[in-house]
Length: 110
Image 1 (cartoon, rainbow, N blue to C red):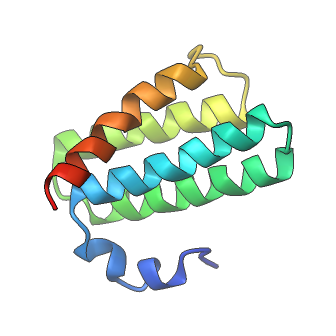
Image 2 (cartoon, rainbow, N blue to C red; image 1 turned 180 degrees about the vertical axis):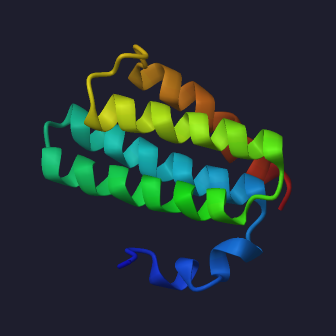
């Protein structure tokens, strides 16, 4: 598999805290939303793919069953929103509301 985040995939991602991981995923989701709003589909798609890649790295490194379930649901909803028909009726605002607390929490633990 070819990774866009090669250094993170090589092991650096596992050294980040869960909050930092989720904040980074949220940053990529935010980029995808911003590019989508600006009607730059290619940039939005690439940001979405980077978010999925980071989410998959987090899934692979997670040992908590509850965390695995939530991450799998988030991944499913992200794919539905960005690449499918949005059957779950997610909104831009709902994605921002989901990831913003991780950004604040990650900042407060530094």
